[in-house]
Image (cartoon, rainbow, N blue to C red; front, side, top):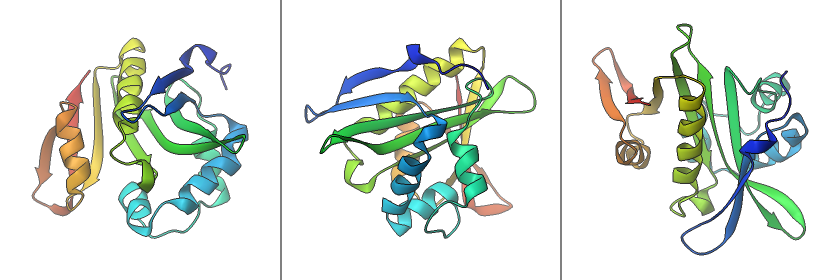
Length: 175
């Protein structure tokens, strides 16, 4: 694994003035990531993982918290509550087999949706992907996830329906 990319740690202010830190995830964030997933609503967990789960299995948790920071980048958005860092969102990309494009995924704590944190995380992720020479970003979204489809369109993603799969759609954007 590459060294931790400290230069990618940034503090931001959200629409309501609260401060959030967006930074690459670390292996020692595993407990925080698990708490984040447990705290998501059932609907938000399903929208993110497209499966019914209450918490992440150990192998999946390891995968999500141990990116190589090159072909797999993950950023968390955190706030400080009662002296402890709490995750309120996570976004990631994984480079595809062609080495030119990547697939992204995002999840934001239900209480933090609509605060601007998702847009900040996606903007930072797209900048990193572009700086690493990637040319396209895409993702799979549940067709019923109207909020995510609207968000993707606002970020400049085009929506592509698959006639053979009515449950998910692809969102694609040039970087």
